[in-house]
Length: 166
Image (cartoon, rainbow, N blue to C red):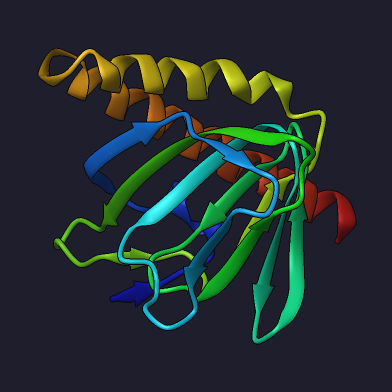
């Protein structure tokens, strides 16, 4: 597995493989554990409502709220807890990211909030990818094309923010 930073995606020929999508609802107190067995796929999530805390080694490292875009890379270990009252909702895009030689890419080792609140411009793309995926085999290519657009837009946004800070 090859490890790169998220903004480096722009310079690579990548493939999205085994895409799946969902729109889950979690109740306050729900826990997702990837502390013993790490994630076996990458997950890109748009938080629609509620709040989640992500812990690594017993310490909260990220908190996500509505409008946030969260990325959970393949191989990362964490525990997430829903702290919303009464529920939290999101759109999740689950996939493997491969480089041009077929090697899986890891975009970090911990949960990453790519964009904090006010990222409402990304929700339509997440919703479009979900709708395409739910159409079944006829939506596979359409769903992947939206994920490519999302990855491109997010990488460009992160590069822009890095230049503004540096």
